[in-house]
Amino acid sequence: MPLPHGVVKEPVRILVIGGGHAGTYTALRLERLLRAAGAPRAEVRLVTPEPYLTYRPLLAAAAAGTLSPRHVLVPLRRVLRTTRLLLGEAVSLDLATRTAYVRTPAGPEAAPVPYDALVLTPGTTPAPPPPHALALHSLADALALRSHVLAQLDLASSTRDPAVREAALCFVFFGGGCAGVDALTALRAMAERVLSQYPGLHRDDLRWVLAEPGERLLPEAPANAGTYASRALRRGGAEIRLGAAPRTYRPGLLVLDDGDSLATRTLVHTPSAVRTPGAPPHPLLTTPALPLTPDGRLRCTRDLAVSGTPHTWAAGDSAAVPDPGTPGATCAPHAGHAHGQAHVLADNLLATLRGEPTRPYDAKNEGLYVALGPHDGLARLHGRTLTGRPGALLLRAHHLSRLPTARRKGRVLTEWAFAALFPREPVALGTPGTEPGEPP
Image (cartoon, rainbow, N blue to C red; front, side, top):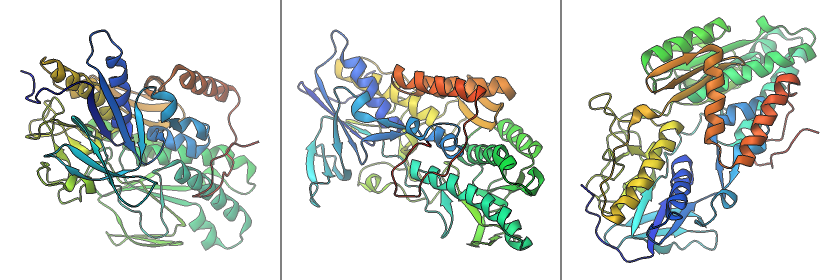
């Protein structure tokens, strides 16, 4: 049965709010579908604060210097040919009149943007890192993290104070989800790769700690995936602290909530994407009449429609989409689901305009991919898990398939191939707020 979204006059005004993975790939899919013969005439608008997509699964690789920073940023105007970009922020919604209010750089007043169909993909608001801690949400964060780790190696090799050296060589990551595991793995490999340039420093001098407040790593994945990741990280020399979170931190000393303390000058804040009840929702989602779950996400049906809200759809981290494989559960917020949901959402939105039935999103079709070392990875797809070198190869193939445009895929593939023969040398590249650059 098609959703009762009603009949609208052409051209249909489709408004997508949020230029992350879910929003960008929804717009891409809509463009392709609307070019087909017999498709309804429609105008797609995308509201986003930045004119580019940050491909976050590759941020850790950019931080470690194994991938050029430019490959992490995808210019939206280049990949979206017919979608109209509205640079700004949606600050409020009027669901009754089907109007979004968008604040642009032109001024402080929010301008009304009418729509016939609304796609909500604003993502979630990341928890701010503790004072003095580093984050990994943007390319600027990645470059700052790289510079910081290299600076600690410089400090440790230059000082004669054992306490300073100990703190400089201890690297603590808070958050045992995909982002935290990827970041620790990538930065550890980078540090070990350059150790030969630091006389007096050895692999055993470095201490890598991953703290996770939950009971296991990778809470967004099945338990066996978290178990494998823990074993792989420990084999590489990392310490896993489960049920632990930072209580206080200042450069030089981290105190965990279990009472333990660590001498460290590095705390990287990479909290798991899995949200907890009581977490604040994205500000836009506090609009009255939008149904929210206890963890602050939009309550959706399996076909990506927002429950009880006509003309409104959602996908990505801000959408609580039922997972039929686990009764009562919803799809974990990660890039794999965002991409898959975007395709199904676009298909279903146009199906309703034609009066055709929709199809449910099948969570089993989307996988989860985590790097655990230069030649070790974990890839879970269609209910099967590959580890080791096969997992690492599938992980890279997955990222290539997700990058838009054949030109970008070719550049990344070429860079990976050359890096296998001639490893890149990590170089400190700027600080937050500076333009990303390339080493000479």
